[in-house]
Each structure stands twice: as C-alpha cells, then as structure tokens.
Image (tube, rainbow, N blue to C red):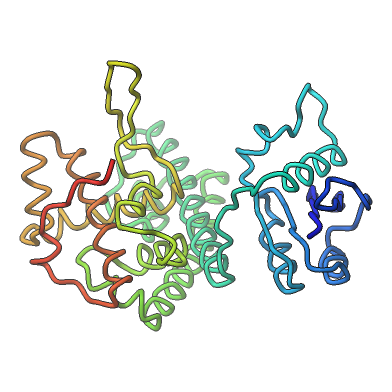
Length: 344
C-alpha cells in the first residue's frame, strides 16, 4: 500500500506519494480544492494529513475514495521530525510524514462526523455572538462608571434600554460612541435569540439530547455541546475516560519517591468544559434537593464550594455518558451512587 502524505495549506498543498519500501514515486503541489479529485484518481492508499482547518474535509474525501486515513495531531508532528534542525518547508514536511508512515502505524485523532462538525460550528457561532454582546456591555459599563452612573440591574437583553432610560431620566444625551454600541446591542439581540431557538429546536428533536436534558441543570446548549464533542460514545471504554478526555480529572506530577496531585488537567474542548461547570452551578442554585447536589454539598463542607462544583461537573459527565450509552433517562437515586475509583 502506498503512503500519501499531504501538507495542507489554505490555497495550495504539497503531496508526497511513497511506496511501502520507502521509495518516493511522486511529489507535486496541488490546489487544495482539487485534492478530492486527486485522491479519487489514486489507488487505495494510506493518506496522512496533519490536523488543521481543512483536515477533516480532506479526510472525508479520502475515505470516499476508499483510502485509509490518518489525521496526525499537530502536537505530535514535531516529535516525528517535522521542522528538524530548524528547516521546515512544505515539501520536507510531506516527505517526513510519508516516510514515518511507511515505517510505523501513526496515531490518528478522532475524525468527527459531519453532524458533529456542524453542531460545533453552530454552538461556536452562538458563543461568539454572546462574547461580542458581553464585550459591548462591559465597555459601556466602563463608561457609565466614569460618569458615576448606576443603572438598575437586569438581563443583558434589556441593557441598552436601561442605559437609555437612565440617560433620559437625567435629561443627559448619550455620547455618539456610546449610542453606537447600544445600537449594536439592539442588532445582536434578535440574532442571539434566533441562535438559542435553533439550538433548542435541534435538542428537542434529537433523541440523545432529549435524554440528556432529563438531568436537572442540563439544557439545550450543554446537551448539544456534549453530543458534538463525544460524537461516538463507543470510542470511550468508560465514563472515566470521557471525564479525562474533557479535562475534568486531577492531574499528577510525580517523580521517584515524590507523589503530587495537581488541579484538573483542563485537556480537551474548553467550551464544553465551561458549559459543564455552568450546568453544575445551575444545579446547585436551582435543584438543592437533587441527590447529586447533596453529594456535592458534602464535598463543599470538607473542601470548598469551587472544588465541589468541579466534582459535580465531573460526575455530571459520567451520568450523561451513561444515559447516552445505555439509552436511558435520568434516575436520581442511581446518579447519587459514589463514583468508583478509576483504574490506575
């Protein structure tokens, strides 16, 4: 089997085809958008690409052409020899990847399904809208402090109206640059609402999301992000593997006779981890009688509230994974059971 290494670029990509015995038989530059046609014309081969924005689309095209695909993590390629001795070119990178692939079996990241990629894009676009709204609100709040103005509290959706109402009550016109930001907030509000409705509609119709949302504190955003990140539950042997994948398990920095546990590793998708922490806070505030929350409350008494929230988020991951894996709905008594220690 040939080994086809592709150093992907936004406009052009470098192709290197190498036989199993290590002989290079073809090298050329190809327009990236033409790669699906190029791959379709090659005999079944091992296709190697590095993780980047275009990687999964090319992986889909390679699979459609009956190739085996390996998407090498970007954090690994340097250890394989890419950029060695301070020399890095597209041609050399493709040569190195093809040469290593002809000698050993390279590890590949999970290639997410098309639905998972679309959901990640959808949730990411929604988060960008909210971050933009937050940036505008914080900037206007900074200006309000310079004027010694204190407006009444309320939801972000009513912030612009509250600022204008306060200015009207004081009979003071708002500066143009402040009003310009309030106009942008007015424009963002319906877009954020539409994004929330789109997520809610999808979660309502998707069977896995419906089961996940039977858990107190888990709404459409958490369910959809979890669905997109995990994609295929069968690729995880246990709930502990999922918790570790999401960076919610303690790290360790031990050597020789010294053993030291660190904070959570924070590996994996940060947006989902933040969402799970928010879901844990929501559970504590809104569902104090839930067995999982009572379990976390006991941890808070021994340690701290923040440690308890992280522990609750970690336990929440295990419950969500179990519901998906077992095709079940939330049962509070089972969720409150102590977590078994992970295998060492």
